[in-house]
Amino acid sequence: MDLKEIFLDLLFKASTDLSPDVEDALKNALAREDDDTPAQGALSTILKNVKMARESGTPMCQDTGSVLFYIDLPENTPEKPYLEAIDQALKDATRRQYLRPNAVDSLTGSNSGNNIGINVPQVHFHHSDQEDVRIRLMLKGGGSENVGIQYKLPDSRLKAGRDLDGVRKLIIDAVYQAQGLGCAPGILGVGIGGDRVSSYALSKVQFFRKIGERHPMKELADLETKVLRELNTLGIGPMGFGGKTTVLDLFVDYQHRHPASFFVSISYTCWAFRRKSATIKKGEVHHD
Amino acid sequence: MIKLQTPISESEIRKLKIGDEVALSGIIVTGRDNAHKLMVDEKPDFIREYLKESVIYHCGPVVRKNDRDEWEFVSAGPTTSKREEPYQADVIEEYQVRGVIGKGGMGEKTLQGLQKTGAVYFHAIGGAGTLIARSVRQIKTVFKLEEFGTPEAFWVIEVQDLPLIVTMDSHLGSIHQKIDELSRRVADQLLAGKL
Image (cartoon, rainbow over all chains, first blue to last red):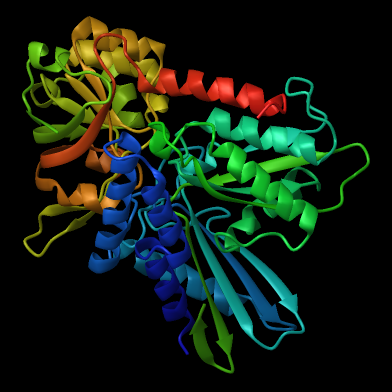
C-alpha cells in the first residue's frame, strides 16, 4: 500500500470526476429549466463539460481549488508518513496538471508552483479507537469561497432573531448577495453556533454529505427542505442568468455556543462540488 | 446562436443585446488581476495589437507542454470578473477592446465603459474548464509568463466557437442588474415571511 498513490488517486478523481450525486442533481435541474433559456444552456454546457473532463482525465474546472484533507487515524498512529505522502502527491498532481498551482505567498504574491505553502494544504487529523483509516478530500473553489459569509444573531438589518427562523433569513440573504458569483447552482453548508473558527469549520465539513441527505434531527431537516424550496424561488438561476435552480442543496448542522455569541456561518461551494473519500481497511483501499 | 469572429467592428458589437448567445472565434487574450493592474499602471504596448478590436478573457488556465514542447490549454474556464472592476473601463478604452469574457458580471463603471467605447460583456460558463479548453485551437504567444506565473500571464490564443452569452451590452443593458432587482424583491418577501 503506497500512501502517496492513494492521495494522488484521490486528487485525480476529485479534480476530474464529478460524484454521481452531484451530476444527477444537475441533470434534474436541467430537466426543470424551460427550453431555450440561458439557464438551460448553462446547465447543458456544464453537463457536457463534466462528461468531457471524466473521459479525458482533465480538471473539470481550471480552478482546482484549495486542498483540504480530513484524515481519521487509529489511536497512536503517527501523522508524519501521511503528511509526507500528501506533499509528494501534491507535487506530482501539480506536475501532471490534475491541479493548478494555487498556493500564493500572501506577502510577496509569488506562487509556490506546487500547491504547498504555509498552512497549505490543510490537513485535519482526528484520532479515534477505530481500526480503519478514513481519508476525505475536498477541492474547494476560490470564487465560491469568496461568497461564503459569517453572521451574528440577532441581525437587526434582516430582523433575524436567535432562532431557526433567524437562521433561515440569514441563508436567504447570503444567497441573494452571492447572486451567480459562486458559480451557481451551488451547494450550501451552514454551521449554527460555535466560535468564529469552529462555526465556519462546521459549515464546511457539511460538504461531505450526499445531495439529498437530510439532517437526522427533524427540525433541521425541515429547515433544510423549506429553505431549499425558498432559495429556488429567488430566480437567480445557473450562473446568475435567471432560472429555477439557484442551489442544488443545503446542509445545516449545529453546535453549542458561548452565551454571548450566536454565529451562523455559511459556506458556498460551486456546482463543481469536488470531494472524494477512501477507507483503508486492513491494508486494502476502498473507495466510497 | 450568433457567430462572431475577431477582429470585431464597433457596429457589429453594438448590434448585440443582452441574452444573445454567441459562438466566438479568432484571436483573443487572457488577462486577470496582475494583467489589468499592469495595463492601467504602465499601458504596455506589447499587447496592443492583440487587444485592438478583440476580446480580453478573465481566465487563469491550467496549461501543459505537449510532446512538441508547445503550450496547450488543459482547463480554461472564466474567473470572477468583479476584481477587475476598478480597471476594466480604462483598459477597454485604452486598448479599444470590443469584449470582455468572464463570469459573475461587472459593475456600473464597466457598463458605462462598454457604452462609451462600444463593447460588450460576455459570460462564459463558470467551471466549464475542460470544454472551453477544447475550443482553444492554438496558443499564439504568451507574455509575462515568468513574472506572473501561468494563471496570471497574458496568453494570446486562437479560439473556435467559444460558447458565450451577452450579459452586459453597449446600450447599458445588464442581465446582472435585472436578476439582482428581481431576486431582491423575492428575498424581501421571503424575509417578511410572505411567500
